[in-house]
Image 1 (cartoon, rainbow, N blue to C red):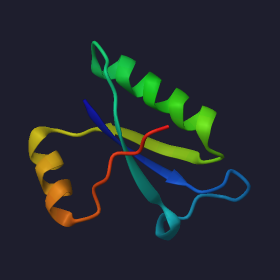
Image 2: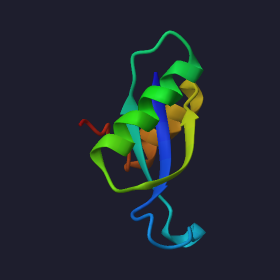
Image 3: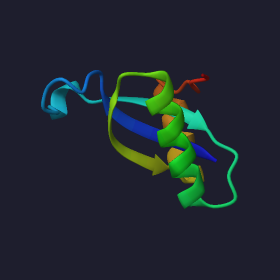
Image 4: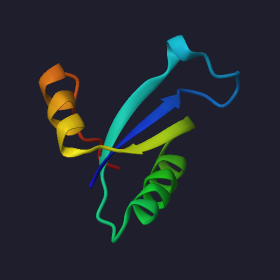
Length: 76
């Protein structure tokens, strides 16, 4: 399952919509909730990021992200 994680680069300041970034993780999980938990844990253990939202991508949304040219799976 591919998850899109929206985040701020630091936890030191209040989130600003204009500075929200995203990364993509391929998580092997039995269900969506377990995938979200694993995704959060990976990001928190490997980055100083402030996570705003974790979203499971549908097949259509994934296809759109791949076409947009910014899609790249992050590996830790």
